[in-house]
Figure (tube, rainbow, N blue to C red):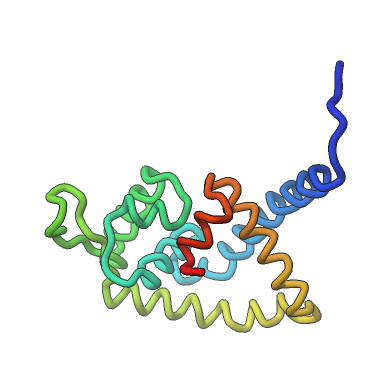
Length: 162
């Protein structure tokens, strides 16, 4: 079997990605435990958060795109959230079939309760970490996301208004 010789950067990114996969699984499990008593999962919490941070009501496809998630999976979760009264649908004046997803009062209260649980948890999790290290890690992750999205540096700077 022929093995291609890697580069130090390529080997480091491979190691980072494998650790990110493990971290993602741990974060999802921890998030599930954190919000379980609210009737949420990490996935439901994440979608409620995407609705909260949106500047205006959006259709499922846009929410999925913003999350970098599969539209069908997001649709399934939003349908479950709607059955529980956490989100509702309203007519989309720009597209007859793509209804807009809105947060209900119950959804807002549930999301706020989840964030109340998240605050002490994140402070505990971040204890002992250096902000400069966190910022460097964030820059590396964002650079990898940019490369995976297919956007070049000039296109990214244009999008960010640099």
